Amino acid sequence: MQTKVKFFKILTGLFLPVLLLAQSNPTLNEETVADLASGKITVAVLDFEGRGISKLEAATLTDRLSSELANTNAVILVERGQMSEILNEQGFQQSGCTSAECAAEVGALLGVQNMISGAFGKLGNTYTIDAKMFSVESGATVKSVSKSYKGEIDGLITEIEILAWEIVGLTAPDHILAKQKIQEGAVAAVAPAKKGGTKWWLWGGLLLVAGGGAAVAMAGDDAPAVLPEPPNMPE
Image (cartoon, rainbow, N blue to C red):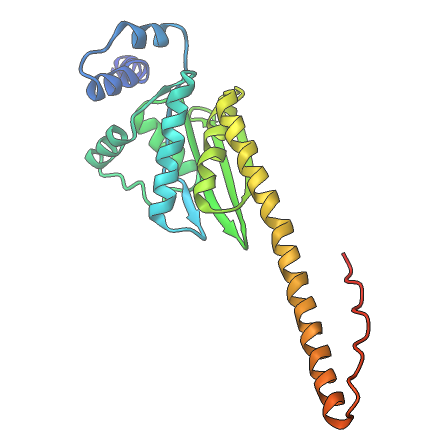
C-alpha cells in the first residue's frame, strides 16, 4: 500500500504541471510538450509583498513580472489566474504567505519545481525590488535578485522586466535595456535642474534683501545709494 501511495505522489509531481497547463489551455500544443521534454523547470509566482506601496500596486507589478517571465521562454510558468483558482479550491489563502515555508507549501500544492517570491518597497524617494527563486523540494535558493530605483513608480515596470530575465539567468533584450538607459538619463537631467532652481531661489532672496537695504538708504539720504556687486554663488 505504501509503495502505491509513493508511486502516486511521484506521478502527481511529474504530471500536475502538465494538467495545470492543460486546464489554462485546453489544447496542450506540441511546443508545451517539447518544453517539458527538454527539462524546462516549472515555476509559479507568489503575490509580492508591498512595503510602502498599496496592495493594488504590488499586485499589478507582480502581474507584470509574471508576464515578462513568460516572455523569457526559459521556464514553464503556471498562469496566475489558474494558480489562484487551484489554491482557492484547496482552501489555501495566498494573502499573507510571505515566508519561505509557506511558499514551499504552495509550490507543493501546485506541483511545481520552483517558486518565486519577494517584495516591492519604498524608502524615501527610492523603490526597492527583492526577488528570490527557490527549490520547492529542497528549499535552497536558486537565484536572488535585488534592485533599487529612484523616480516615479511606473518606472519600476522596466526594472521588473529586467529582473524577470535575470532571475532565470538571462540578460534582458536590448530594447528593454534601452528603456532603462532612457529612464536613467531622465532622472539625471531632473537632479541638476532642481539644484539650479534652489540656487536661483537663494539668489533671488539676496537680491530682495539688497533691494530692501537700498530703499532704506535712499529714504534717509537724498543721494541715490550705489548697490554693491552681488556675491558669487557657490556651485
